[in-house]
Image 1 (cartoon, rainbow, N blue to C red):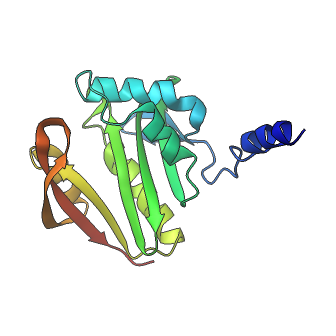
Image 2 (image 1 turned 120 degrees about the vertical axis):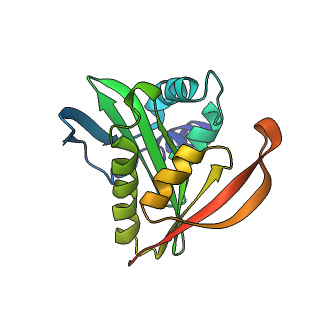
Length: 180
């Protein structure tokens, strides 16, 4: 009986209050659906990663599940176009730091304002959590992403040597100070 109770209790802890209600937004003439991501979205998240990272999976299924069901305050938002997941972004709240853990938009939808929009949504969430800064790491070789982050107010802080295990690549640590 105790074993059965623990199994049921474990399943119930997966349910949580939705922090980000589903909504539609119009950007540059296209209508997208934004919604909070849940465990059932894993296959689509992995597919987005495959398309963004040329077949590679920087985040595993277990890494995504760990984030989505973490007890640490967080938010992951997916963006859908015609019912297809085309991108996502996530943030984890630790004290006054809102750390952007992941952002990906499939190549055919890049340059349409979606990345900037998702980052603005995460910043708004961070403000509600009274954070005073957004932080992130970006590959040193990813100049396009660095340019976007700088346009959005991020500043370079430091280089993290051999941060990315794939290719042993360095990361640029960036920060944007915000008013909580």
